[in-house]
Image (cartoon, rainbow, N blue to C red; front, side, top):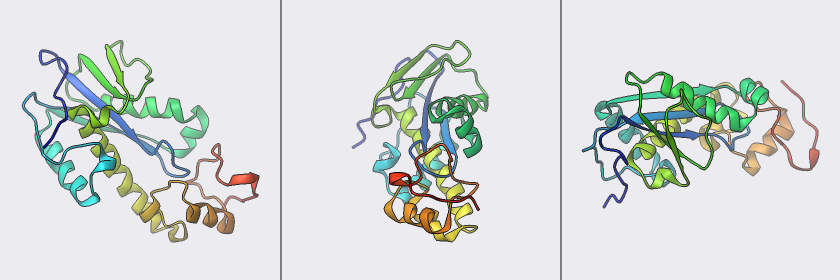
Length: 202
């Protein structure tokens, strides 16, 4: 049974925000922003990490169909390197909210830090994607759209197995960086390899 909470303020236009890909070595950081109706529910909806891939894509379609409004924001690798991953995560959320057809009156953020968006009041909630429906919905959008992107660039560089690891720092991913070098899809300000091993750019 779904234990996630509905909107905190039922009398306000409230949006939930979350990001995916913050800890990855490659690929963009992607954020979702979702405004749900007060009566929204789905038995599968949860933090995207707790939902199977197949169910995530079913949920994405359901969220898009039933949300009052939604947006997806992307910050690519080069921009992450320029402004750092924390600021890139905030920017991705801002870009997601820029796409909303309604101006939110309150923002729910997954995590403990946020950069104010258009002076709209916000609340940061640790593990919010497993507590509130709108944040969980945002996490589903962020995760699925980012995963699709990683599977697309995997076709270009199959040796990194991004279709499986999605850019996260797995042992196999780092071994591939050591063997083949970094690509334009890697975040060059991140520690791509342990122990300062050398690598080259494609």
